[in-house]
Length: 140
Image (tube, rainbow, N blue to C red; front, side):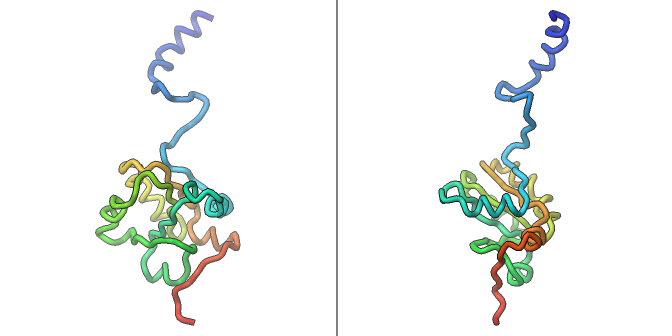
């Protein structure tokens, strides 16, 4: 038993003081599927409900977006500037079309120290495939 303790001591010493060796932690980023995202958006406690950030282009956004979403185009030069202006203590649900752009943006959200960022895996395509509603800005 002493031998095991001696072998584990250096490994345990390398862990941060608040680390739970039984869990993996990715910081403020939480990956969710469409069903989980929909549940988050219906939370009765408005403070727990994340703000939706759609990082697709304006044209894509007009084609259909989640109700209440704010659009910040990942492909625009000022994307990081706009993200920096957001309240870092709020929770956000971010997505793009299929998850590629929003996945690439995760490093920025983490670097800026956002409290909680939910990433909609599969993007709006997964949302629509799960038959969740979208709103459009197209004239009818």
